[in-house]
Length: 409
Image 1 (cartoon, rainbow, N blue to C red):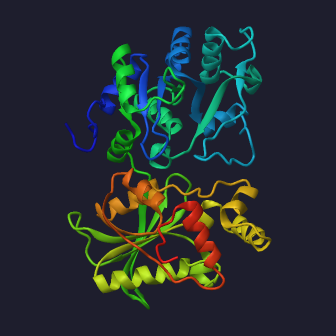
Image 2 (cartoon, rainbow, N blue to C red; image 1 turned 120 degrees about the horizontal axis):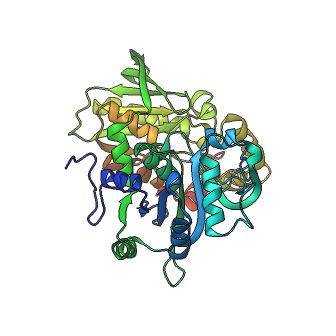
Image 3 (cartoon, rainbow, N blue to C red; image 1 turned 60 degrees about the horizontal axis):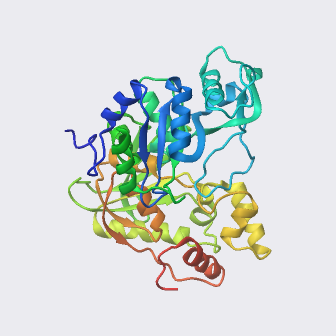
């Protein structure tokens, strides 16, 4: 079995086996990472949905029956986001709910919901063929799929597309008899009881990483800096066209752990040396350590303000000046505490030859994000900057509310 595409966990089926099951119209179970939701969903390809399928997943899943689809299809049918500011903890992109406008009764029966799904994927369907609100809950998958966001929504679309089917499908969370979410041991039992295939999102990420590529190396040039001689490599992404940059020191050996810093853009700190944060100091400290070590990769990701962008970060600063902390400020603006995803960064690191990281970070979420995309954590290197008068409260908030590993505070 190919080590890049086979299951990494005992009792889990391979992605190729799951794709065959989807083509046959079977329901499968998909489980995500234990550090994320650690939940399983029933999944079936949209074009294979029947009333019997809807009845099964609603009865045995007990969760919310949703329809995962691409943003392009949702836009074609004028199915808009449920809210303008998504503050869901995992960023799940719910839209307004829908029913078929014709050929159903109340919309809630298994037959009615199956018809709504078939109307949704019919290429002849127009926006007026759907009623809003309804009893099917669409979810928008991010363009990069599980390589950008390791969620069930993206897994559905990725699996259906990989199976050669219409890129949409039904999903429903699986609850146990006591109302608690079914975890992996119980999911194995449910799969065996009903003869279903069980796969993990972690394995789907590995499968897609082996088959698909979402970043492209665009240019590279030697770059002498105040910290030493580096090699600068620019990447574009096929997801949103953004440009990310890596500064590489020395030769990268996949077998040897290497210093890695995945640094989110901070114009105020990196360029203007703002005293509100420690970003610029972390950047300089990382580059100095790489120069001293003789090797390393400094990856500069365009994720200003933990993903909310420069303008919104400035608005958050204003709220902080009025008494909010950094987490509260994001919430008041309608954002979760941290919007960053690490799949694209992981692809860039792999392209540069990185497999084993000495990761320079204080952020445990970054560790989980990179490990879930197939990179090995050989060690963590803290980047702890002594707080100043202007950023002490900010750093304390990152420790207390975001779980950052800041032992010096």
